[in-house]
Image (cartoon, rainbow over all chains, first blue to last red):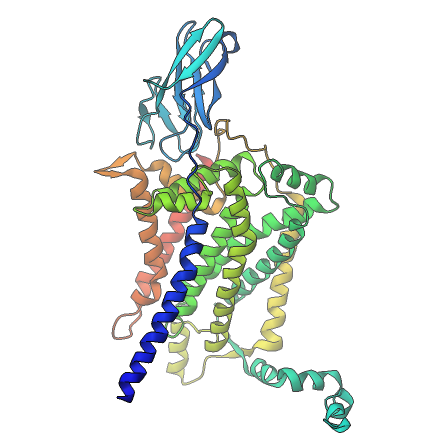
Length: 143
Length: 372
């Protein structure tokens, strides 16, 4: 009888302690995980003027909060890709001599269609559309 | 209470001055007694016993210089780089304090590795020191955590991209990876929230956990004493003599003190002759520069990730890399549990082979990561 009572008290104390611990830890765990912020959906962004880039050169432009690589392939041909390497999140750059996109972090190469040609990136770069409106360039997501 | 009771606690009443007064209240006699009987084994490998102390000494320097840097550092993307620049160019001896902090961090990790491998090769992890080994491995992991979190704080280009890569590696952990990466970054990408978090980890979370682990590690070292290598124990047993010992105090302590002075000399020379550079301010909308690489102690995994193709059989290459590092770390951490056979025989060759293999991998891949 005494043993049962002791067992009951042990369970109650243990259960109470565990419940208290959970009630302390749960808010802490929820607190340390950052809240999901709804990123303003950007479908189009200005990319500067046509004359800002010479053929076979590139620059990084802002597309909302993301970097985008804008490449002037030829006089009238433009390309734009997400500048975030699909391997480990580094920002890529255009290699003029090789006519390829290069990630300096782990030596990944993409061609001018965004496809992986060498190195560890697992997926192609997301391609965006470039439009010329007069003298202005506009980059937008593929519909 | 009578006047007599009150005066009996004064130094004069005890007749021994301040030391006796303190002894009565703190029980210093027992500490003195403990130190008087503490000994250190003397053999051809005794020199390796100094490296744990050197690592501890460098950790103390880290704490002291870190506190000094805290007086000026500001953990926001708009001010972090400028505040470190201010420390290095305007604050008197600021360049030296920051350089000592950076160099001692690197030396501390180097000597922690030396200490770990010396413990493995001297087989000091054997029963009953398994928990001492485990607490040491946790401390090494915490030291790497200090390095990773502190690296971002100057908010320069190299540190920014190293953190992007590092947190993305964390995202590759199966099931919990995305949550882990979000927890580390404080959001979807490396930005102001990540900087604030890393600052919090670096100056509050990690120091708190490290202090507890360090206390446990040092308590266990005192509890079980310093281990003699099995071959020394065996040779002495065959000759019917005990393993030669030297008193910890003053003999070993004064030698350790000289080792600390030597470490301080090396640290001072490196900090003064090769001041730690600040680099360019991080720009989230700039490409990762050519030649980008992490700190030397992350070079081996960095180069390995470079070599692994995008897909290995049906698995993602990054996942294979992360799994490989995890298995390697687990294998090494569990050393005390596979190093000794059920009958008590030591797997000396396997331990030495694993240790040498690990050193070879870390050295070769770090050098390749640096040069290529």
